[in-house]
Image (cartoon, rainbow over all chains, first blue to last red):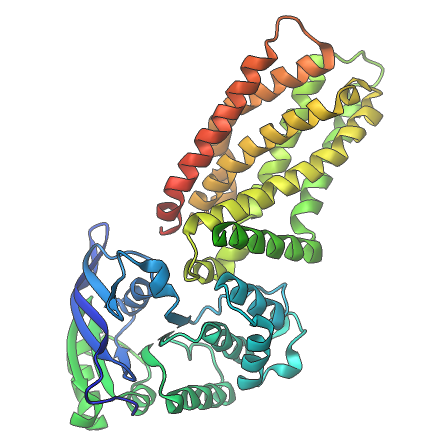
Length: 246
Length: 225
């Protein structure tokens, strides 16, 4: 993994709470991630995984608690934090009536990037979509949308990449291509990842940190090296009490 | 500077999308055209009161605007792009102003095409007597509709009956704008001495400024659900 033993924390989450009316979506979440970490958060539907990702990416505000990213508080400096975060969700955040290239140019301009055309070309090549550069995004398959979504998230070269159930709706071939892109990003060692997933095996293989979220509580967190895949599966099922059917 | 640049980028994107799909413009324009035909048949052989005609014109513009306003956040919401915009390092009010100016642009285009059609259908040239002043009234009236409508469109976008809810919320709030623009337009068409144009013009400007300020201050909370 890209984890450096002496690297300082890049993300610190302290006592994070989120309530939607009377419903407590997240309860006292505490997490610390170092540069190069790949944390996968597992949990059943409605556990609060997406809510956590939405708070870290500044889409919604927490009810209480604080998040620090690169020594900047999310509540005080959200614009600066957005410069450092890329988000890939099951929703690609792409405009169907614009071409792949126009989508990247639009987001690149919103991020105030210089040489945005060059960067868009470079990323389209990286995700293998150069040949569909001038095609309308609404003609893309689900797999192609997710690849383009990665290119969109990487436009501003973020140090933190948030992956919110990125495999939703992907067929095996698209999943394989997506895996290759994530692996090549990991090899670059310049990103810290937080991924949410239902896929225990894939999440275990990708990560150096594992966490389980149930009913808004972070019930388990460990280094991947300290646990075997079998034990992790066992712990996962104990924690979610067999609620989830895969 | 970046604030205004981001607004322009957003408007350019919306105009480009609209030029491709023609969804908003076509529905607004067709609505105005068909309503004019219906009124034309209704008033055949009758002398039309100019005050009534002005009221009809603004009612048609308002209903046509609702068609455009209700679509303004749908693309963003259905494709998740609203969240995509929310994670860009720009103030959230950029999204509001980009959308509000885009809506204003579409409403003004439809009005610009409709005014000559009004003259044609009702053989009424008085609409075009003071084109500059008329443009001023159309601009301020449409700005009022767009500023309030865009904010309410963002509020209703997360509801199931969003296309029903928008007019229900919009019409009561927009009444002061409608009264002002109708009074001002009647003044331009008939030079009615009982209408004080300065009062209504100032009223309209203050209304527009207040609602633009309210939207600027609240939009961040509105789109955060």
